[in-house]
Amino acid sequence: MLSMQSIGKAYRTDMVETHALRDFSLEVEPGEFVAVTGPSGSGKTTFLSIAGLLESFDGGRYVLDGDDVSALNDTERSRLRNEKIGFIFQGFNLISDLNLFDNVDVPLRYRGLGKQDRRARIEYALERVGLASRQKHMPSQLSGGQQQRVAIARALAGKPAFLLADEPTGNLDSLMARQVMDMLSEINEQGMTIVMVTHDPDLARRASRNIQIVDGQVTDFRLYEPANRHE
Ligand code: ADP
Ligand code: ADP
Image (cartoon, rainbow, N blue to C red; front, side, top):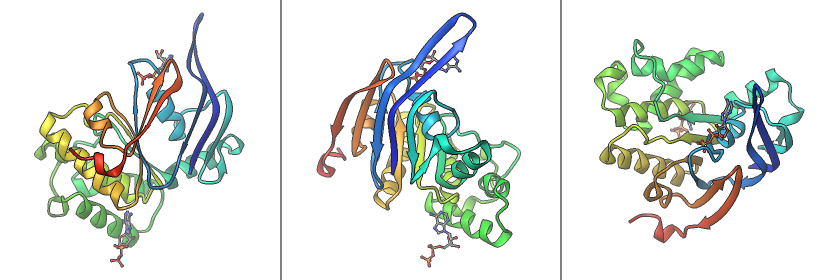
């Protein structure tokens, strides 16, 4: 479980202080698919960065799968991030001169996993996103939707407890956006916990729960019955 209680986060630049999150509380249970919406500048990315242990916070309590995040040092926090969190970004963030196999391998190598384990994970993950036959292709040979599926494979290969996605369909046309959403729904139905930031209410509706962030706080909370999740 992911549990945030009264988290605060301020950015200070020169004379200006911006409170990106204030008294922010949220719990995400295993197996949920949470979509986070809200106006630009409301704190969505800040929330996701803190949830993903990329960003520190000022006050409050954040417990990730039993670990109290504020009690960890930098090394422990990186290890927890590598073990528990998979990220998907709007811009895919693939390395253009590595083929698909090697792209998925990057974070696994970084973690120092053995060759056999890495190979099994990469093949499993590319299979899962329907790109097993394209291992040797380069990112530029794929459509945007396929590139995002490689990014999903890269996240899954880490066997994370949580998949965090920031506008994962933001760079895609509507057909490819749908395909990527279908894939995320399928992965969630197979048990993966997903938290996704999106602008698009139609995509948000396909999650199991929607939260809205306004001015750094959760303002709305809506639970969708599984029967209503697919149009
Ligand atoms: P959203 O993702 O909802 O657009 P963000 O979390 O990116 O919102 O930003 C929330 C607020 O924090 C905004 O006012 C933004 O300008 C500010 N902010 C975000 N990141 C930084 C930063 N690195 N330095 C200074 N201010 C920041
Ligand atoms: P089985 O065929 O016995 O069900 P799995 O499909 O669980 O085996 O695993 C096959 C290989 O895929 C294993 O080597 C394992 O390391 C890897 N694997 C299993 N689950 C995941 C996952 N969620 N993400 C990435 N790799 C996985």
